Length: 357
Image 1: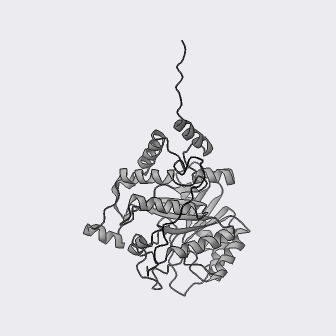
Image 2: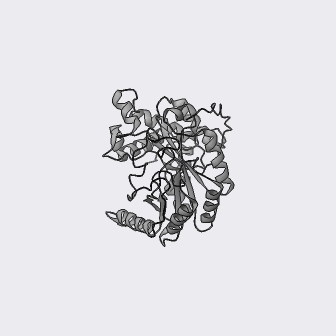
Image 3: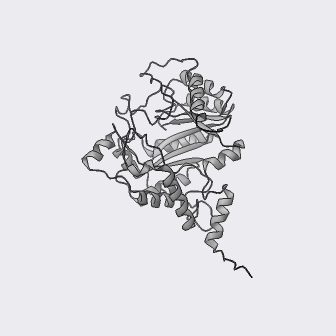
């Protein structure tokens, strides 16, 4: 009996090739990148550096970005009390204790999670402090025997020449990444969410970090108030031209105690449905340059703080649906940039006229 051969369409062949390239996934995942760089999966250990944010301490605002929780988006870090403005003093051992506790948490309930970790300064803005204080924190993290790399989450308006130099010094010891919370390229949306800085500030910071060879990972939120599908894709196309190394794509979570929560309770904003989010996300991935590492395609809203959308709590189900839809539609990262697979030149429509944010 002769077996019937199923003909493969060009779309199927291209999808399969992408999956082979990226260890079974149709996009360049962080897991794939880490295995390429370190030979194994490396987990992040979240650290609270005891800092605050210029959008909270009165420098630019007092309540932070409208989506940001009181924990400065660091609910999964080992908690410590944040320093009040101007009262930074090194606490020897505080970083080591947090790394050790974070490793202990990771290992509980897991058979094996490796021997090396990424020290992730997550809470608030982790370059918003005197250089001497930052140096003490970064060096303690870098010298921990199980630290493989350092990841620093911050804002693009929290840099100085001295901080750039400090990061360059750290980069000589172990890999250092900087994570910037852009959320959107549109300054009009930035005003709505009280981001507090213009796109030109982000551009300048990325250029300086890249000049020093420091990889930049950018946070983008899908479903921000007032943004449509086209505007979200504009942010992706813009980022393709900035030379960033990685991206975190995340659904807008509405958390208790935030300005967005007040708007949600008034009925003035509506979060994306599951189908809407997945459709937008797939389009973003399809238009994203294939050399940009995708660190996240959804997100975790703390269960005790999450108001909406409730469907986002079913993370495994969401991820399975995303992967299924990519397979069914033969979608993979960068497949809709152009036929050659090269980055499509994107002329930014405008750096919208800068207004006080």
